[in-house]
Amino acid sequence: MGAVTSAIRILVVDDHPLLRDGVAAVVGGERDMALVGQADSGEQAVDLFRRLRPDVTLMDLKMPGMKGIDAMRAILHASPSARIIVLTTYPGDVQATEALKAGAAGFLLKSMLRKDLLDAIRAVHAGGRVVPNEVAAQIAQHMPGQTLSEREIEVLRCVAQGMANKVVGARLGITEETVKAHMKNIMGKLSARDRTHAVSMATSRGILG
Image (cartoon, rainbow, N blue to C red):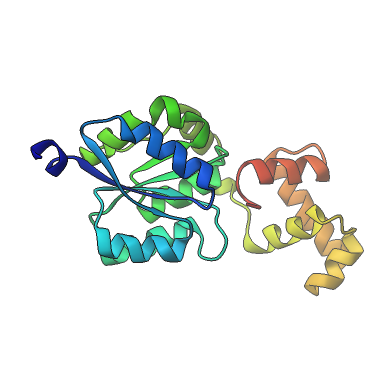
């Protein structure tokens, strides 16, 4: 019974049952770990954390309703010592930066779970931080000075929906020339070749996620 008592207690939060099952399978064979709860939404994550007090929480970023980062902030506000590893499909530096600023102790790509999950859980439980090299490289590459403004993100969201500059201007209450100026700034910050490339890069980096 001692092994169970000393096990790292884990809560997994993801709206995809297959991923939760996968985590359960990986963790299930470890003597020093115990999966104590599963949540499929941010709201449920906050509630289960409050009741279960896990040692390590695995938190998906994109879920219906309350997003993973918002759930993480709520958990850390109530329990600043909580240890949370963020799970995501894409190594978007914007999401990584937001998660780490919000207090995440780790950032793990879902493609790495089978290979790196156990080591990440143990490292974070021991007080360490886990950030994959490819995510750290993207964060370093895109410095804060290159961050898009809220207005630029609004413009790019409209462009991503296929709107022409004139339509974007009408939607946002600005002139067509202002839209063009914003797009010029956006493409410069993202080092994008054109509008389509800018949308693609912003999506992969998590800016439009």
